[in-house]
Length: 296
Image (tube, rainbow, N blue to C red; front, top):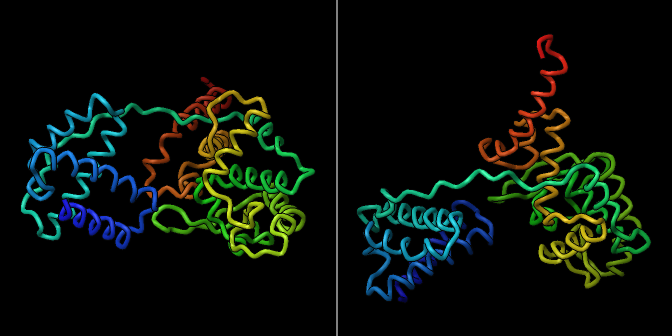
């Protein structure tokens, strides 16, 4: 058992050092592989003595109780782990080489229309410092299409109001400069001058968005806030910070942005990740064709 735990610790450290994966991603790898290790222990087996049949047997156990996406993630975790062991000559054969991931349905991301976004942005009470902070957070999230971890991770020194850009640290600790737009710049400026000093009350904090405790806003706290504002705005759809990120991408494409530009703004390393939004681009092309083509 200890040898399995030590092996997993070494692997997780390798992922962190080599790929700079986020804490949440590393935890997902650890949970998947620890669960597999515990199951192996009950079968009197170890991680280093696994063969393809063991993995297939484990997946047969997990399939009835897991969603296809969870199974796909589990297989990806095991595949990454055993390829690491093979590369370092700890094992001689990768037991995952013939394991196939389940085909996942290509679900379209949930989004908001432009009127719903406006209603959400108008929901905070601007007579309170916290309300002004929340409005600035929502505006920045929608203007830049940030992940919630990126939003709460922005430092005060990473925002340039004069240049209208924010430096964002995304997945794999990769940084990118994202333009904020005039509306977000105005709200960030108001927050910095009118609300942030009041909320901090002479305390120091490096984070751009702070709480009444003088600490950085957390992902969990902002999830709660955006759900509350969705209710106030009369939005009945499932709501999360990621929905505003999808709205950002969808609305950009609706107004003529190029998919490659959207990819850069979202911080996607691969264009295939951004292609989930191509249904929006296709619909717009159909409309342009029907309006401008003589045979449309």
